Amino acid sequence: MALERIAIVWNPSKTEREVLETGLAAALGDDEREISWWETTVEDPGQKATEDALEWGADVIVAAGGDGTVRAVAERLAEPGAGAELAIVPLGTGNLLARNLDIPLNNPQAAFARALADEARVIDIGWIETAVDGAPTRQAFAVMAGFGIDAHMIVETDDDLKSKVGWLAYVESLGRAVNASEVIELRIAVDGGEAVTAAGHTLMVGNCGMLQGGITLLPDADPSDGELDLLLLSAEGIAGWLDTLRSFVWDNGIRRLMGATDRAESGDTAAHARATSVAVELPEPRVLEVDGDDLGEVTQFTVEIQPGALRVR
Image 1 (cartoon, rainbow, N blue to C red):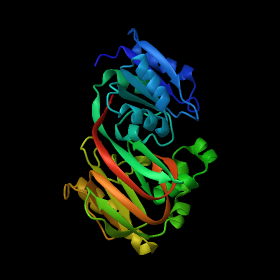
Image 2 (cartoon, one colour):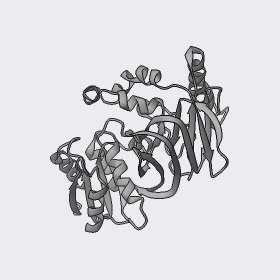
Image 3 (tube, rainbow, N blue to C red):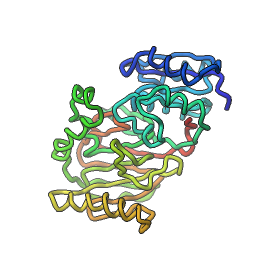
Image 4 (cartoon, helix red, strand yellow):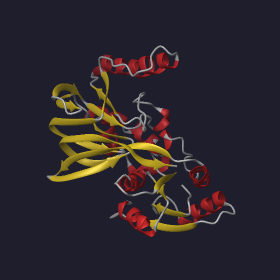
């Protein structure tokens, strides 16, 4: 696709427009393109700005901001008939989709250059449906959704600390997140099958598998394979967490690098699975997170994959 019209949907809380303009100008060099700028707001994290950019006729829409901005832009572009491609200038704390796609972090010029030079890659998008405070909601995610430790880490993380040390602030909240995550019995159905009972304190449903710091929770996750990857954690006490650590480091880490296995292996406290749709019922409310955003407490949710939903440069 020829990139004649480039729209920048940018989060002003992450950087100044002049910084982005400088990076884009350096990446473009002598190339002349039509450029438009669309600022996000608290009321509109990016969906309406993306809609306006599409009406303007954008060939590619650049999400310049954190995971929330990327998710908002991706959500609108995943709708049928959107047409435009997505590019990312990652400027947030997590930058999870950018990390999984090897997009340069916190370097607008390098990210713009990658977007202008590379061919687009087709990736999937996950959609989650639930009810928060009785209000139905359907939202997209590019990386990961679920409840448990990851959701509690988001709730427990100090915003001031996050602004100073970035994603390391999540590590500081890990202990409180673990303490807040108790094992419960949930009902889960995959691919339209019968619901079964399972025990766990954390369930992650992922389109991508890598988190900050290069930590890979879902080693089989591929954002272009048309499937979701599931991880259910149930560790309690020192022995249980040692088993989970062994699963991550040895079974699905070192042994995988050695070629002993090419699929994620489940352990006593870490169960892996794959599906195209998942339905979950919880016995009591739990905080649900979607690509790093806290959606609130829920008692049920469904997730499904939309294969080939986006073209990402």
